[in-house]
Image (tube, rainbow, N blue to C red; front, side, top):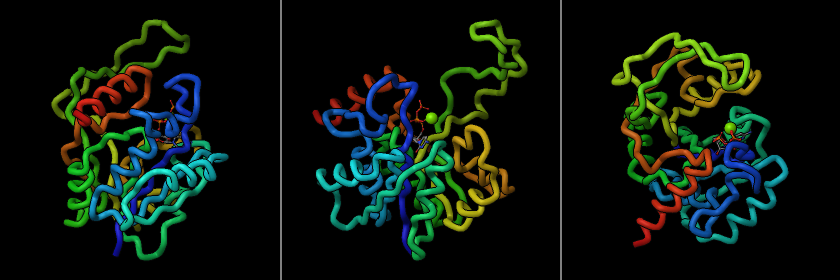
Length: 238
Ligand code: CTP
Ligand code: MG
């Protein structure tokens, strides 16, 4: 019985703007992916990290891992990703050795998640939950709209969910391996694919639970997120 972390890092980072693939961009001089790998390897429970590299970037990612200090007790694998996050996660799952029983799926784009959050997810899976998601309450009220056909046109509001019942989900999401494999086998690979692995488990009709997430587990998506990430790193280094 072993716990592995799969890190999808194959995205281009379109919303961040032009440049290298998002996971290879640096924060405090170190590639975002290396921060994310260290965040997973920091958990004593995680003995294997599978990095899902940009489709043509596996060699580059392997040399990045070789060039940075990482815990000796952790094993690393690098596999090429796919065109959607869902396909990339699937590629990572397919590379897992047979003795892995618990799987964390963690976005490379969440480089600063604290180890306590990782451990809380692992412990909740170990206690018997088939799928566990770290999440936070929302600051903003959320509206469901009927999306406009043309950009910028006013959009009719359809509903206002009660904010106190909503959670913004983060990663690492933790799974019993067999449950995650079944979810990826059952859900269609169409269009954009699923952006959330736990959602695929829900579609199987299996229970998913939420544990407290962390502010610093935010996803680097847009340019302003890079500013915040640099500030968090600078504060940690003080
Ligand atoms: N991801 C992946 N393979 C893809 C698309 C996304 O492995 N084909 C990964 C990203 O590298 C990232 C995580 O999924 O670590 C979350 O996705 P997101 O934040 O959307 O990253 P990108 O898809 O790279 O960004 P964008 O949507 O702005 O292009
Ligand atoms: Mg994306």
